[in-house]
Length: 361
Image (cartoon, rainbow, N blue to C red; front, side, top):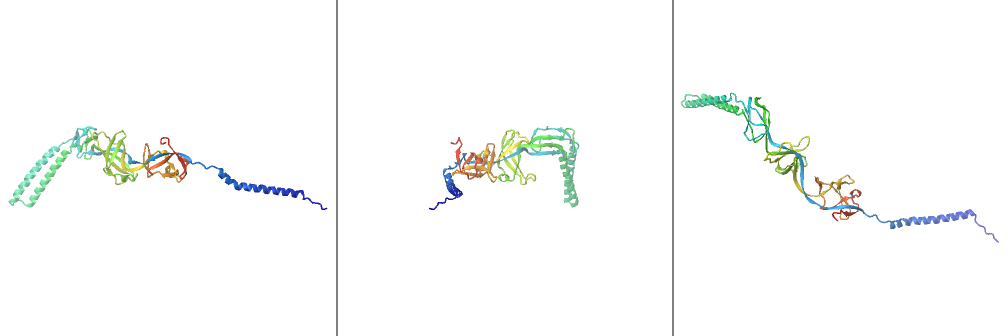
């Protein structure tokens, strides 16, 4: 009989190990292939982020240019002496209101009245002399040269009389227009020379408000345009633009404007700080809180809203006007759902779940 030979024990162990390894490897591979499908099938989709929105409609906005200016007199004149003389009387005190041609002070006439009488007599003499020479020239007793000399003397006498009258008039310092005497630099007994400052008169009606506008604001302004001004004292007055500078200040690159305002009761004083509001155009805009503004990924300032597909949309902020109640943005759709809460957690293009504010629900 033949004897059956059994394989060595190490071969049996190697075979068993190989078989187990293949079996385990096949199961792991199948598990790896099926696992993503099962995980994908079992994992729930993430729900959209909830954001609070507020529905706003565009409204018509009267755009205004707001400036800070100051009040100023319509005109101020410094009066100066035109002759050398002594002050003999003062008729008006500082702060007094005067009418046109009101006598402010009197200078000494000295011999000027005598010189006036002398000039009047001299003129009369030359008039008679010229008349007599003309009569004689008709009879042939006077030459044309003599007639011309007589006429020249007559004209010189007339000139001397006018100068004498002016010198006498210059002894009276009068108000050139109605206003208020804001300064007086001389007193009784002072001696003034020609050109010396004597007084300053300010015109109170009308009054001016002076301000500066920049290069972008100037094209919106027109002469005669209505302006509302509010003084720091609380007074509100209406006026019209009377001057727009055509040359910018070299240092500030701004243009000066003047607004003429009535001052019938003389209540305005020069140098009062004033806020000027000038209406320029009407535009459609949304009034929003400044807290709604945010920056895009590119660093652009704007607002975020939700469109009809619940997608986040970013609109660059185009400022129409800024007030104490908020800011006005222009060039936006008429109706918008602004994101009021959560705008910092979403980006443009994200799908969100909008929730209306409690006031609108």
